[in-house]
Image (cartoon, rainbow, N blue to C red; front, side, top):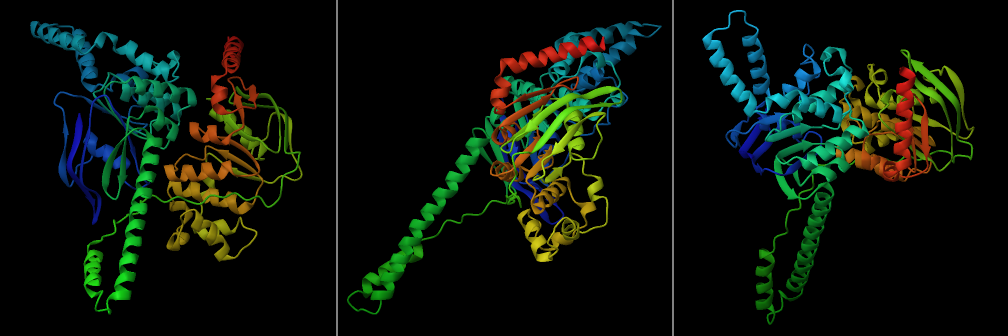
Length: 545
């Protein structure tokens, strides 16, 4: 059990948290939600002891061990993968190293023997003999191949490090587990594995995530941060959302009844206060009126952008034809004779773990990269807007936001351009911010403004939900659902994919394409797709051997 007692945190003059009282108990998984800037990650740092409170304290059951997901991907570059995972239980790791140091001594003394015996006992109590196999099991579950378990962390790529640090947090059955955006940069198979792990985890979990599907799958409670307070709700994310909306409606309806009563009393007082025979009743109603108080419905601090993609031209029957596209990068075949034709009703989700393949395909069909072989052709009625996964170059300049967006608009009127920025929550002085200093979420909203102002009838989006808060993801999700044109997109957000796509494409290892007109959930449940993925995997292994 871990609890916050009267916790207040002030940053300068601003109180981020004000006398927060909340208890997290064993056997539950708590989803910590709130608008960007509400303090979700900060509160996890307070719970972990990484950040001190201005007042109040954090209390944890004596003897319990807390583990949290590390965010520094370079912290363990000098260590092997297995050692990095085992360091999730620092005491166990220290015992292992201390034992090794004692046993490697040339002059082994009686004192060394006594100390080694003590360490061996503690090691056994902590299931130390199973440490490496337990760590390997976690790594394999997250998709880290056994062949790199003894590699040094510095030799691995960013996505592999993310998985290894997650395995570190999960290692050793911690009593309290803190996870800040654990699904970021995970492929869908790894996310599914993590969901099952947390569902079966018997201790306390507190997780921050923008993935609605993930929160619905794993959470037993929702802890909502708003206005410096944390309100606890039983149930998953959808239950919280419906409950909070119902509560607001009920408060509004109660206020409406009070407003009607006030108006009735005011009318009576107005009509009869000058009438001697009715003056007593009027006075009585005036007293009743004074006692009626409207409940204050404080609006949420959450802000939803307005995302509405309106194509300037209706799309024709010929959209995109791709024939035998192949591409090899650094000696690895990324795309292998990829062939497909898009229809005017298609909303295609590209799924699977091959991130580079999806990005490479998008870059080729948008003209940013040349294929090794094969062709593609856009229909003459199409116009494309592209959201790249890496937009660093887009914002590497001195432009202010309004000037940056104006360059992409056919209509150069500042008021017109500011209208698009306003929809994306850039109001007033925000429009004169320099684009190079924007946060990740602000840059994403700028790119979506650019796509809206383009009036394109084909949208290509490579991981657009990265860096967005829950409200912006919901707004983007709704905007794509009602978009009348063609969409090609990649996303790790299960709910986003399921509610947007009507066609699924997966580029499997080796670069071949699986193409299915279906929903995402139906695709995942398909035995045929599972067999195909297995066949492709076997073929790739045979080719490499």
